[in-house]
Image (cartoon, rainbow over all chains, first blue to last red; front, side, top):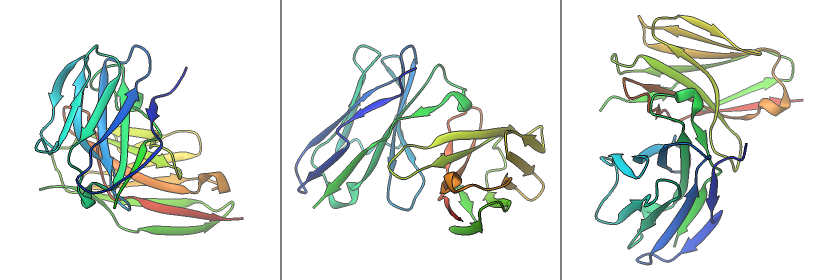
Length: 115
Length: 111
């Protein structure tokens, strides 16, 4: 089966600019997650969707980050305005349903550099 | 807050040796643990998991040991191969089964 697709692979922007990342999960996976992975650290959950509804966004910096999954399939994560500390890899993951840790599949991520 | 951490940031082994990667967790409410492998430029990949009602689980060339008394988790890789070179993360979760990741250990396998 096709994996989790993310684009772009790399993005370099100046601070205070905006940026958007796109994720297409595995077909049929109802649950979608966005993670932020700062260099040298483990991924940190930003937001979790179940179909097109938000389940948990407690770790999302809502003053600058937003995410949506309008049709319960693809998702976009936006940062506006970006800060230097937002430089990280943004990973998207999906699973068939909540509670399947072994069924978690990650995409390859988007590496964001803010200069 | 409570978090998952790893003892060693880098582990170097010779090809063919067995590798042991350790992890300490602090959340006593965690009941599900997962090991992930992350190769350069890729997302984390599931290796093996274990629930808190078990103390050992084996997969293909990998074994996870869980010691709930001291809140310690380890991943053993038998006959380590160059393709095993990667960063390994342990992750823990409670009822939500959403993994909380530790910092990671870089495994370097020398041919």
